[in-house]
Length: 220
Ligand code: GAR
Image (cartoon, rainbow, N blue to C red; front, side, top):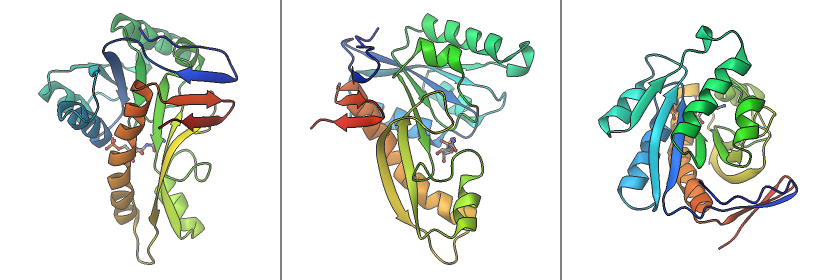
């Protein structure tokens, strides 16, 4: 497991394990999962292993992607639990059973609750397809187009108790074009997601992220 200093205001997020065990939570097609797999397989992200992919959607294509790469792929049906707490307790049990050091949300369309957050504080990352704090939650591309902003992008952040509110690690910008649709905008942003998410994971694994309150310092 990682050697994480858990002081609340000033936390260096570092990992002393030789290999960082990553668990990826998904709900859909899994292109960000694929980017992570590719970056590990091509050696850009070193000392990392995706040990399990967990989906809350039975037929998420991300599960197929995992299997193709020999990664354990698990579907947990949230509806089969009495409430969110029990669902998340099961999630934590599975994450623990894989000796998880880092949890990555990759298109996981659920708000992470306190069971998971307290078990993996400062060790959960998310990617969101806007420049946070703008346009949190669902339908972010629709929100972006409807508002008429001229620049958008994506954000990798630590996950806290709020919705898309945690300390920001990396962001990347793209222009919003006059004739953009949700599809064209999402495609342009996704290209950036596939770059900055692996980059953020690499920084985490190399112990280069320091959380000071809500500011993340990135060392060279
Ligand atoms: C990505 O665009 C990701 O940023 C977004 O879902 C998509 C998942 O695509 N996540 C959120 O909106 C989370 N609030 P993928 O399954 O191909 O990685």
